[in-house]
View 1: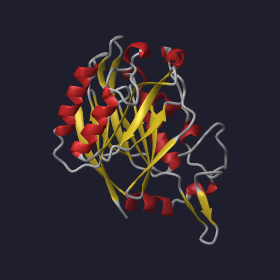
View 2: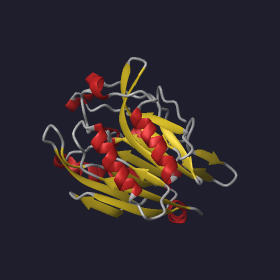
View 3: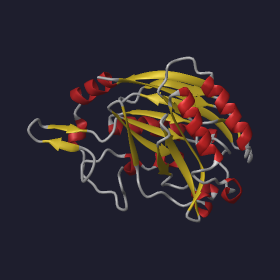
Length: 278
């Protein structure tokens, strides 16, 4: 069974200042001394949670994606987080999964935060993204997606958990669920509760990476970046302070829980409409 080492970066953001944010994150990433394989950044890490996509959006050939590509190659890591992307005349809150080879996957945030007007400026994504690293399957989502359990639910049919009839076992769709977020402190109880719920119901590790500090609209973020094991227990939980934390997850511990408590085999089959799994 393999292990997987990840680094979470909980940081304050410079409001709508790309150059300052990229310089700040580059310093933090290059300063990681531990061997790590994946580095996770908050939602809209280059701008903060901005509702000015016309001013700050970039193409996939733009400077921020190029920055991610160069830094992932230099540090030999997978680098992930979301930013504002324009494509086909539309704006997306797009999470980039950048490999050290320069190849990448993308996930466009499905659930847009109408309470803050995100749905007025951005287009919703239509497909989920499951990445593969060292035999681990990793589901990637963004902030408000956390409130919608069906979007993260391990699937039995048509593509997802598949039954091995002869052995009477199942193969889960993914092993780790990651949320990149800008989640305000005043709703942090929901953040913590839902992260634990996603881990328990999907029998997987869950990582939620959030920012700290005030944004340009004076919304305070307490961070509460968490790493949660499949029984819902927090392995790491950091509030208020900036922090760069590296942790190693063990596949054997996950498999032991799934073997002793084979709850997923009793899950209800369902189909996500307009969903294209990758």
